[in-house]
Every structure is written in C-alpha cells, then in structure tokens.
Length: 330
Length: 255
Image (cartoon, rainbow over all chains, first blue to last red; front, top):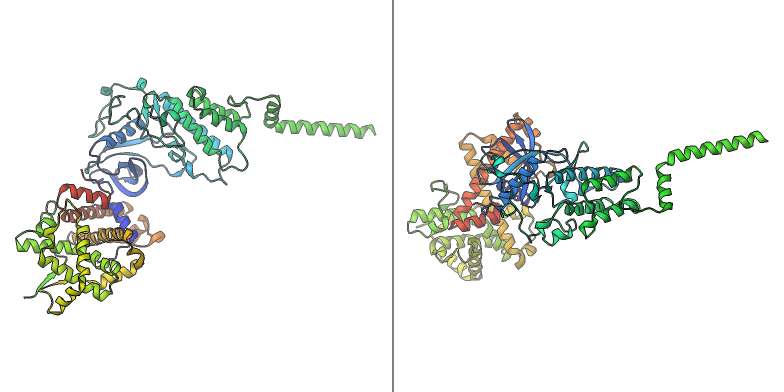
C-alpha cells in the first residue's frame, strides 16, 4: 500500500469534495478559489474545447437556500451584459445535487493584491473608474452589488477590470421582471426575486457584506431600505484602499472624494456611481472635483499643475526674450 | 485451533451502499461477523498501532504485540457489542478501549505468554512503522492530550484513503484502466510539490492528449470518491452518522 503524506491526504480530501460533473460537458482541472457559498474551479468545456470557470456549491444544499442564492447570482450575471462583468455561459444542477454555473475564466490578479511598486496612482484611478462604470451599469439595471471590496475585483492580463461575486446582490423592486418572462435554465427554475421570497432574498435584519466596506445602513441590517448609495459607500472604501501604500500621502482631492463617498448620512454621498467616477475623471484631467472646494490659492496651484508644460514653455520664452533684449542693449 | 485472518479481503461481496460493518460485526452469523471485523480492522489497525506507539510511548515490538492482542480480543470478546453509535464515534470508542487495554498491559502480556491467542491477524507492522518514520512525527508533541484526537482523526483518514486507493488500483486493473490509475497516482498521490507535472507533461509522458489526461483524472477521482464514501459508510451505522462523517472527513454533504 502506498504511503500517503499529509499533503496527499489533503489533496485527496479536496478531490473527494469535488462536485460530480459526470454527465456534463465540463471536466474539472483545478480548484482556483472559494467564496462565501461556493467554490470556483477551472474546467474544460469538452464540446467547445475552451477553459471556463465553474462555480458550484461546496456541498448539496438540503435547505435549498444556498442553491437558490447561487442560481440567483447566475441570473443576475446573465442580465448584466457588460465588459466589466464576467459573462455566464451555462447553469444547472449536477448529479450529486449541487447547483453550479459556468462563466468565462478570467486570468489576472485580484485588486487586493496590488503591487505597491508597480501600480501607480494613475493606474489605480483608471481601474477605479472602470469599477465605477460597471457599478453604474448594474445600478441602471436595478441591481445592487452589496459586497464591493478589492478582493471582488479582478484585473485581467490585458487590463480588463471585472467586478466579481454578485452572490449577495440585491435586485431593486422597481427593476423586477414578471417571473413568467423568464425561461427555466436546463433543469433549474429561475429564482424567485420577489422581495418577500425568503430563500433567494435576504431578510430584513440579516447582515451580508464585508466589515470595513459595507455602508452603515447595510451593517445595521436595513436591507429593505438599501439603495444605490450603499454601493457608493463601498466604492469610497475601495478608493480609500487604493490610496494606501502610495509613496507619500494621497492627494487631498482624492481623499476628499473617498470621504464624500463614505459619508454616514447617505444623502451626503455621491448621488450615483457615475458622479463618483466623473469626479475621479476630473481629478485625472486636472479639473476641480466636487468633493473638494478650492480657495484661490488651491485653484491657482491646480491650474499651474494642469498647465505646467505650457507655463514652463511660456516662462522659458519670456526669459530667453529678456536675455536677448539685455544682450542687444549692451 | 489457530485461525488466520487476512486483512484486506474484498468487501465487494456485500452491497456496499447499505452494508454497515459495525452492525454486521454484531451479527450472529459467523461469516458475516468475520468479514465485518476484517473491514473494521483494515481501516483501524494502523491508527491504533500508531496511537499506542505515540500516546503510550511503546516500542515498535511492544506496540505490535499490543495491537495484535487488541484486535484479536476485538474479534473474540465482542467488544463492539458495547459500542453505542449515539454516544460516540467508532474511533473514539476504539481509542477508549485501547486505553483500557494498554493500561492492563501486564495482564495481557501474561496471557500472551501462557500460549497465545487462537486468532492471529496478519498486519504489516514494518509498513506502519516506516510510515511513522516518514511522517517524521514528533512523538511527544503528538502525544499531548490536545493533539491526540486530532492525530487519531488524521491517521484514520489516512488509513481510510489508503484502503480506498488500493481498491481503486484493483478496480482500474480489473477494467483495463491502468493508465487512469497511473495518472492519478502521479498527479494526485505524488509528493512532488512544486515539481508536480502539468497535464501537458503527463500527456507527453503517456502519449495521450491533454483532454484525455483531464478525462482520465476525472474518472479516477470520481471512482476514488465513490470508494472512499463506500468505505466510510461501512464504518457507520446510520444515514445520519454517515452524512456527519462524510462532512467532517471529506467535506462532502450528502443530502
């Protein structure tokens, strides 16, 4: 009998816990991560010959609550077709009873693994703008993410920025479709998005999200009254994270933007992710930002900074001209 | 009369999905009882041997005699009749029995000297001893009360997986799927660490496509899982207990 080391035993344990994809078109290759309610595997789609990511429950869910939530996530992703959101290819139930869905396999790194040396402030702000665009798109479709944080953002090998893990997303009542409009997926019925549906929707008082990134109202469990401004708070926390580990202290206008997004009073936050993204764009373009009132000196400093090349050229020209005049007067 | 009991007999004669070795071990049918005890001993002898070595600090020779004697008594004395699955897991029960047994070691030694037991069990002790050496177990650290249960749990899992791997090997051989098992052996059982070969390396080595490597490994893992769960089921007495154990040891929830 062969010797099984601790490492081998752990590997076999993981193999034993693998979802049974027998009978599907997918062949699991490796485990690539895990979230609150599921595990993500790298797999091969045997029909199309491409690699996909499969998210499946850790185990068959007897209560059906987690299965409904995972399926709900798949449905949310399916209705959010956007370059910043990973596309869903397929969903279903495995022979062992686990619900799963297949999505594009994204190669890259998570935003929480920033390289302080390589990622400049400019790069970070461009990434943040893309996150704001994606969240604004989801809000326009009536969906709150509710768990925005650096570890839920992937930066792909080709610079693509993807907002991941929509497992605790909330569908705003105003955007609900009639259930009859949605067809079942494979052998799985569409989830019930009704605000009163317990398995797929979070109940009032239940706290889902991540401490440090969730809004005060979300932390208090005020699920029913959450709106897009809760995600704005989380975006502010993500921005604050991006401003850390920089050489020197972060620019004041950017700190002011993060502060405004993270106001306890949600009426004082940005009205939308678009407005927040626009303020970041203004900063990058050297324009005034709404969160940072300027006095005349700050305005001049920003103006000088924005037109520094032109100012240097003009000053160089004037100095040269003055020197020439002096030279010819001799 | 001396009776030889060879561990590792095929349990496939029983309907694996329903059969419980614990229940069968209490059966009045002698054949059924012997088979059941073989199954239990196959999964537990190594953990118990290592437990005696570590917890009780016995030498290899003493631990070997004690393990032999313990399991011989398990067969003869119907220890398992006292086992109540609602109160403890089998491995906890066996650990307590082992502690009582080793505490009375002197008496047991005398009995052995008086002529030995009628039942002799063939167990590969040198293998168990070499496993202890390879695992580089710090004997005193593992013997601490806080860690001993954890140690026994891990050893039981190691033993269960070892039995399942052997059965998988036989299963693959009987179906002409030796390559499936070889891939599983290299990729999942190997201790290569960072040197672990990629699917492409394995494909080149066995002259098969990468997709075949994926499929063969998926097959072997699926069968391994099935066999391991069957073995686990044999060690439990009820569906509830089986599910609890599957969750605790394999992280699998069977609804």
